[in-house]
Length: 422
Image (cartoon, rainbow, N blue to C red; front, side, top):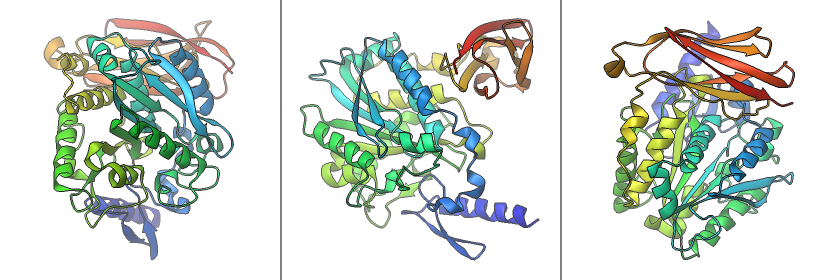
């Protein structure tokens, strides 16, 4: 009973702090607890129920595999902006029609995995990369007009060491921007920001990708008291624009309001505002943190909405095919990603929209088999409404080799091959 009451109290306290500026101070069981904008206690010792190590399922090795796959695209150049505390590269993707010649291109910067446990923010970033490397009309327009700098894993040491929110020096990188000397990761990113802002193509939009325990998708909106009345309106324009591409899935701009009593100094957005004001739409996005939320997912739809909102904000005219991304018309099983993988991968499938298929959903089975046809596990066996689903699959105790996964729903059956590399 005590545990249950404690959980309820923490949940209510989390709800109560959403509307306020800076990190809130709360009393939990007589102890002062400080929460950050992601809805997590600032002190790692207070994380408790919020941490589920199995959800830190995208490893540094997985990133190295993906880097090699991304490197195969003619639209990508890969380098690093510096090194972590333990000497790991802070990898950067440059994505454009010609990544070796970005003269005249407008600049968007994206970084993810500041807090290693927040893999959902990375998965949205990963889907943005997939969209930008595709051959859709939208992707071609984005690459022709813009250069996207993407840092997919800003805190690689924390990922390798299994530290939920800190780097190898036990520092929260998100809140290190006004502390001197900086951590190596912060110093590297600040230097990169400074370099880009001094270039002929300064950053216009900076996306800081995170995940929140509040089981909602939202942007951290900075109040005019900490910015300016005009920048407040610009943020509203940006957030409302993104929401039009994923209706009712991303919270309104005023869901999480910060800086009501002045500008905070410790964040990447703080540096952007204090040094460049309204010239940069510097904003944090928070996705649904899976251990707190059974409805997390739809990373592709979220990525689509954010990218389209970015280009609209920059007044870059794009196609109007977004409805196709949000209104599934047929059953579909996607290739798992990453593939090859070790030890985790994502399998996506689509259940058609009710208004187009005449059904209200479907009974779904998603199973994994070895190369001999022996069933390994059942990932899904329940009724699903129309929509796009992402299922995480982890192979901890299986040998390297070829495996198959099969989706069956009604008369529809499809299988695909995946490769586990140890």
